[in-house]
Image 1 (tube, rainbow, N blue to C red):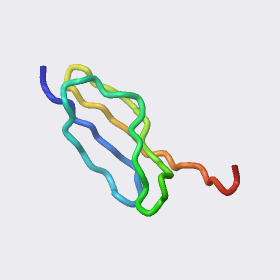
Image 2: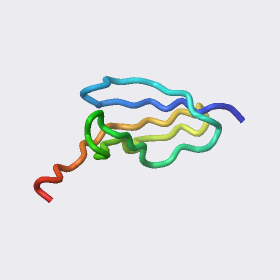
Image 3: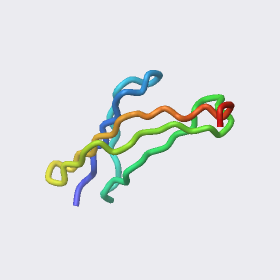
Length: 69
């Protein structure tokens, strides 16, 4: 077993980046807390997975506006 490479793209405040993960298969969603967001999260959804190369690609999605909920 090896390590997975996660590729994250589309986030306006962090730009595109990569992260090495443990040897478990990636999930479908990666959430994060927005700085100063009081627990409000945005995150990334899985776009594709290459099981042979062990690369998972994720794209950023914006959180909803709680004021309009």
